[in-house]
Length: 283
Image (cartoon, rainbow, N blue to C red):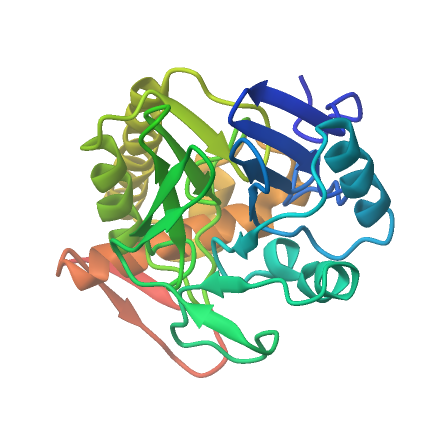
């Protein structure tokens, strides 16, 4: 199945407590689009709002009507990236007085009147409880939400259904990300509702796969350095030789995030000289 899956359902009801409306923003970084979730039996909690695509609101309203719902009780957000909070104003215009909450952390340009959520806060809904978990790495303000009624976790962009997660250079941190994966792994969690792609039914296997994938990339980078490769482009060319060249800029972000982690651990060092690409070496 392609990551950008045109056949991915626009709406779905995975369980009696969880519904999904697709954000209608497919792309290389978003796959079939951003999943927004409605959680609860009546007046559900809306988790994430999509990017603000005009066709999203009519789709959202149709799904709400199909479920017999009049409006969401409130909105909680996973993190600051546009494809997750871009629909806030669209929904507030439609549902006056709609409460919106996220972790406010190194934020700028947020929608107005956003409530702050902290690690461990609980959000009560009709028949559901969400526990906010600070899981930085993809973004410094990232929250996952644990749903004890299903032993499930809404992972935002920490775990995806069908791809690996990008660690952005400006606000990502791979060392934090690995800690976040291990924190999720320590929970009694069986199902993952990701922000992109289908539901993941074997949560522990997916978390183990994600951790092992990162450790494999780390070994490959260390081996490349040991063989005399010194720049990110040369490492990408070797490590991602079976990946289309169009994806190499994204791969370069991944390699950079690994090198930053290794440098924080004192295992590699960076040398810079003017505008030339950084050169790296083992310590």
